[in-house]
Image (cartoon, rainbow, N blue to C red; front, side):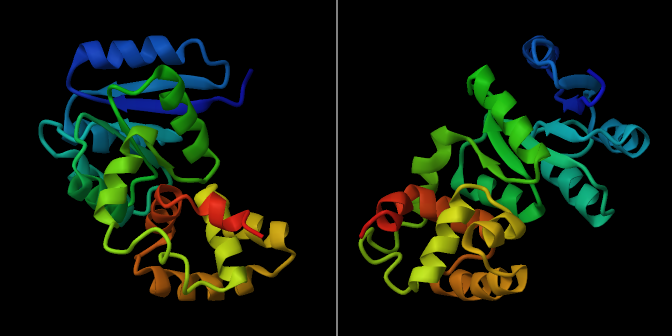
Length: 218
């Protein structure tokens, strides 16, 4: 197979890197092309090798994971970044998301979840470790479950539902037979009503508040 998802693993613990490599070796569509133990080296290797997905530890010598992530986004480098860390704090997760992370996975996750995260972000979607959903719910618990979606129109609720499934604007437009411009206009209103900054936060809010039951309600 030639169309590999090219992966770089950045973690200063060899046992972590080797463990991830062994897991990914069983995946036909994934290939580890580089490793790094230092923040400065991560930046240099990414520039040269241009991997598809970077698995990035939050705590790196030289530069932290967040500093590396911000640098990559400032440089407009087209690489998907999954934060792979032991950090579970809601503030840390939000900082990573706002800095431009495509995925956030804790190191205790199952191998299947790491592989799922890689495939998901490679397709242009966002990924949040399932074990963190409850944690993120607490951050957004300023509204009760019954009222969170009350201000959304039926169309806005539909769009929010598809956001929670990781669909892009183009994919949502296809599902609802609308133009991408219409989806974008609705998203602006949705973010304002839900009091979130972007689609990732909207998706977290939707999933943790069981949007599926609201969406399927007659």
